[in-house]
Amino acid sequence: DQQVKQNSPSLSVQEGRISILNCDYTNSMFDYFLWYKKYPAEGPTFLISISSIKDKNEDGRFTVFLNKSAKHLSLHIVPSQPGDSAVYFCAVLSGNTPLVFGKGTRLSVIA
Amino acid sequence: GAGVSQSPSNKVTEKGKDVELRCDPISGHTALYWYRQSLGQGLEFLIYFQGNSAPDKSGLPSDRFSAERTGGSVSTLTIQRTQQEDSAVYLCASSLGGDYRLGGYTFGSGTRLTVV
Image (cartoon, rainbow over all chains, first blue to last red):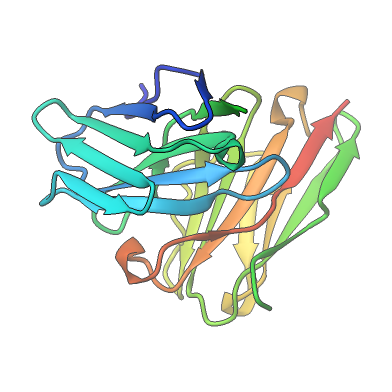
């Protein structure tokens, strides 16, 4: 049973507009949440994170929102750029256990 | 080295053969992880090494899969009697310690395994 769900396998957005990527998780014990970005033929790279004591974390064009009651996480990218085109993975953590990843959402930013 | 190095980058093997995939973590990183990404799937956890502790093998999909980490550094993932469903990108990551918050994971570029 999937602990982390990214229900949209793909998303297309026009350059300059907002990209919103969503993630749902099942276990309320998860206490740290992350987004990773992956380009083809490269390993995933860390993008942004948030701990369970916060509901928002912002880093430049990237903002992560956490809704603990809904067990929902989202990543907002604004404005979207063609270089943002990649696969985005949501990941969750509890204590010292290895990261648990979702299936990813492929974002295409169209110029 | 500066990053996590994996070799080979690509491997094509015949069904039933054994394969070994290698990972060189960042120097000084005590934790090492193996994940795999099958077509259309997310990153699936396989095994985790932390220092001298017994590895967490809870993600290994079958007893054909094994991994070792020698001297707390280089790790080798071995798949015996490969099957077509083993085709995937195998990713290795290392981190400073077992607690992600100490420094996060650095991933290698992966080994793309194709079983024909």
